[in-house]
Length: 79
View: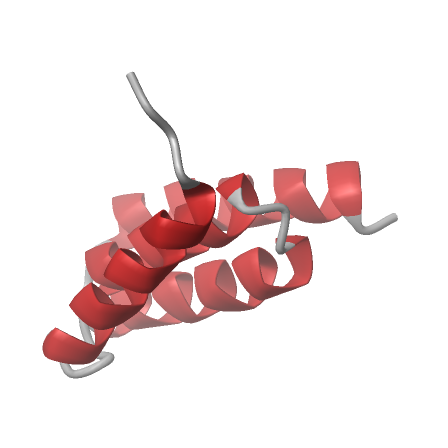
């Protein structure tokens, strides 16, 4: 299939906006889109926010998964 990471960021940003910036899954998808586009610092920031939102919603499994992905991106691309 076709991949366009920049377009993925556009769509994920809009989805996050439509969710009012309060949905951890939408924010996690935005983090993945940033990572796919090579915007690793933005990916980590969005992932950390997604994990915080997940914790606030009591979704601890999602928070742990997102934290793990953020740590992997940070370690792989920002160190």
